[in-house]
Image (cartoon, rainbow, N blue to C red; front, side, top):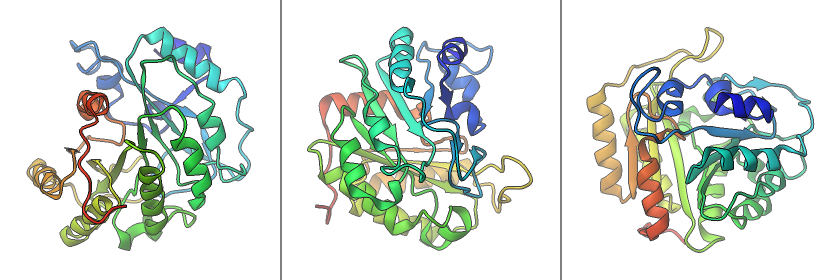
Length: 285
C-alpha cells in the first residue's frame, strides 16, 4: 500500500495526521508485524496534504495558499483502490477554503469501479450546502463529517471558520438531499468536556439524522497542540457506546484509539450500506 500510494503521489490521513492505528489498519487488523484478518484499510486524503485551516488538535500541515489540486489525483486514487482489490474505501480531504467550492467538485470526480462502497469524510465547505449536495449526489454511500467536540469547546479546538451549528447543518443537508444516504460523525474526548455536554452533542447529532458515531481519545500530536485534559477510561468509552445505542444510532464505535475512519466499524458499515437498515431519527427531516 505504501509503495502504490507513493508511486501515484497520493496522501493518506493515516500518515499526515499521525494516526495511532496505522500499523493495525495497514496490516489488515493485526498491528505492525502481527497476524491480520486480511482487511487492509487506508484513508486516502485528496486535495493535497496541506490544509487552509489551523485546528489546534490536528497535525496536518497548514498554509493559506496550498498548491493547486493535482488534476490527476482522482484518476490515481481510482487506480490505487483498484489495485488493492478492496470492497470499501474511505476518501477524506484537507480543508480547502481557497477553492470556490471547497474542493467538492474534485471529490466528486473520483470515480471508483462499480461495486466498491465509498465513504467520504468531508470538510464543512464553510457551510456551502450546494457543495454538500454536489458531493452527496455523486457515487458515495456514506457521508461523514466530524463535529469534533462539544459546543462549548468549538472555538478552542477548531479553526474559527468551523462551527457546531455549521457542522450540524452540513450533516442534516447531506442526509436529506439523497435518499438512503448514511451519515456519520465523530467526537474527540479528553479535551475538557463534561458528560452533559457529550450527551447533548450526541442528542444533537441524532436530531439531524446521523446514523453512525465514533468516539475516541484526543492525543496531543506535539507540544504545540492542545494538551490532553483527561484520559478517558475504557469503561467510560463503553458507557458512551451504550448511551449512543440507546439514542438510536445504528452503530457506535467507542474506544481510546478509535478515529473517524477507524476500521472498527467497517464491516458493520458495509453490511449497513448493502442492506439499507437505516433507522430514522426522531425530529429529523
